[in-house]
Every structure is written in structure tokens, then in C-alpha cells.
Amino acid sequence: MKKYEIAKKRVLTPEVSEISVYAPLVAAKAKAGQFIILRVDEKGERIPLTISSADQGLVTVIYQKVGATTLALDGLEEGDCLHDFVGPLGKPTEVEDLGRVAVLGGGLGCAIALPVARALHEAGNQVDLIAGFRTKDIVILEEEMSKACTDLHMCTDDGSYGYHGFVTGKLEELIAGGAHFDHVFAIGPLMMMKFACKTTEKYQIPTTVSMNPIMIDGTGMCGCCRLNVGGEVKFACVDGPDFDGHQVDFDEVIARNATYRDFETRAKEKHTCRLGGGAMNG
Image (cartoon, rainbow, N blue to C red):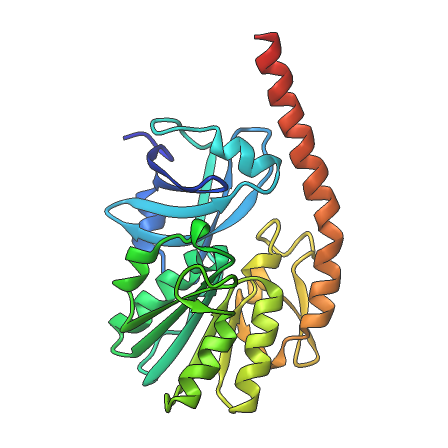
């Protein structure tokens, strides 16, 4: 097998895919919560993606087609090779015997919640994995998540599958039913993590969040993943991506992150138009 060859590719939903890349040196050292940086080709953009699993020389990552680079990545098939695949980077999630923990995953964040839940479960914790999606049609990794925890709680915003409501609502329901959580890990969209922290603050439950969603270049040089944690400036890619959720200034991060959406949309439209033009000319 060639260096950085895509050994496996799996379409999870029309917008989300999974690839397993041959990178034995990365796989040998990868731990839950860490990420890699890849480039599709020599002139390509560098993007960070969280490691979903690492086994037998293969590193698995999951991505959503949201911009030009992820669209280009999705154009590769099994047997194709990436130009760069560097890692593992970032500080691993601190895994210890905490007791009973809840791991909240929102949407694509479930791809990051999965290895965290698995590591906590293997460390002897009782793990409630609460996975949330907008609707049943975009549920991913259910089988894998069920094997990585003590109890899996599926949630959908529209009630089409599992608990009808957000992951924070399910967490409150479990607490009201007598569940005592020693720690909560929240991984997903910024707004979800913000309200997860507001929920756990009421019950004084220590909470760790993954700020992976705001990372861009993965080295700290671009400064786009800076955030305020307890009054100090941190960078998600080099100081994290895990932080004490009760210390993160989510409002500041959410406001800045919104400025990147127009750039992503234009890049995606440009890439799609280029593909369309090529198809018509071909």
C-alpha cells in the first residue's frame, strides 16, 4: 500500500463521507481528541480533520462537503493518494476513571464524540453517549457509537428518531431521572456546546468542550481559532482542542466564526461551477 493511500471510502450521507488513509506512523501514536492536517494535492489548502479511529496502520477521518477543499477531497476514490497527511496533532482528550460520564455529540460532532466515548469506556467509565441530529435521514455512526458506550441515546430535532429534541434536553431528562454525572464532554456545533455548558453549570458538573469546529490551518499561525478561556487568549489547535467549557467565551467565538460562512459558500460555488463547466466541455 502506498503512502497516504485511501484504503477505504464510505459515503455516510449525501453530504458526509468517511475515508481510511494508510498512515502507519500517525496511526501508531493517535489518541482520542487529536487531529491530522491533510492536503489533497501540491497546491491544495491545508485542512485539519479530527481522527475518528486509528487501527492497523489506517487513520480514519470523517468530513462534510462544505467548501472547495472538502469537495476536492470527496473527488478522490479508493486507491488514490493524498499529497500530505500529518499528525497526530493537538492535545489528546484527558482520559481517566471519572465514574459516570455523558458524552454529547451534535451532528458531525458525533465523529469526534465517538473516539472520546470509546476511550472513556475502555478506561472503565460508565458512558452515556447522547447523539443528536436534525432528522433521521442524516444519522451517522449509530452502530459504531453503540459499541463505544454503556448506553446510547439517539435524539432528533424533529422527533423522527429517538428522543424528540436537543441533546441538552435529553441530558436534563437523564439528570431529572436520577442520573449523576461526574463529567460531561460536549462536542459539536458551537451553539450546542454553549447551551450544553449552560445546562451543566446549573448542576455544577465539570464540562469539557472540543473547539475543533473553529480550527482552520491547525498550527495557530492564522489566528482564526483564537478564543478567550477564563480571561486568557488561547488557540484551539495548539492549546486544545479541549477546554473547560465553563471558561470559554462562546459568544465571542460564535460572532467571529460567522464571518467565515460567506467565504466558504463562495469557495464551494466556485468549485461546483468549475466541475460543472468541465463536465459540459467533456
